[in-house]
Image 1 (tube, helix red, strand yellow):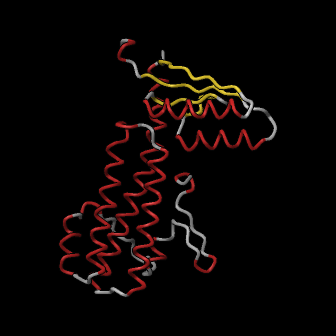
Image 2 (cartoon, one colour):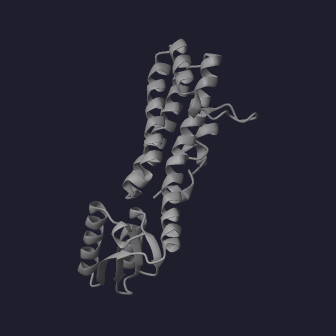
Image 3 (cartoon, helix red, strand yellow):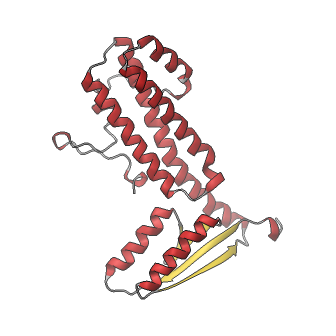
Length: 229
């Protein structure tokens, strides 16, 4: 690969005062929220984009304001294998967040399909289905906030957005108790549905809120901590 064709990266190198420790923690959390790759202590990378440059410049400014030092470099990898390894790590992390959302939507659709066949549509069930979907939207917003990879993650980002849109459409029809239309929409999005395992607890909260945080009776469940900021 010629240098003109090489992927351009931005590298942020910084040093912050050792005390108070909150400053180091704040910078680390900010870099985590940006989804930056830790090349080594206090050296972070992301593929170049105007948005990444803006975030890095702002962070460098904040570090200087707290009495630290920060430098931003535009770099090109000399070893394509190293570059591919780093890029793959970034992509796997971001795409796994979008895949988690698609999986939640698939389980949600499977649950709606079961409820539709049984013609169960109580107000409590509607509320629980809406709650699960809202949790999925929160995860999607968090994933997008962490995602500065642009076109590299566009396909999985779009898949997650489309899955959420399908669920929202079906939820509206489910609320109207139009079981026939719900079935037609489920057939239209059949490729998204993840069959519920035999023996799953029938309650919506138990089957779908299991991975997400809920305040019910001390039942604290979290959806994959590594996916949540």
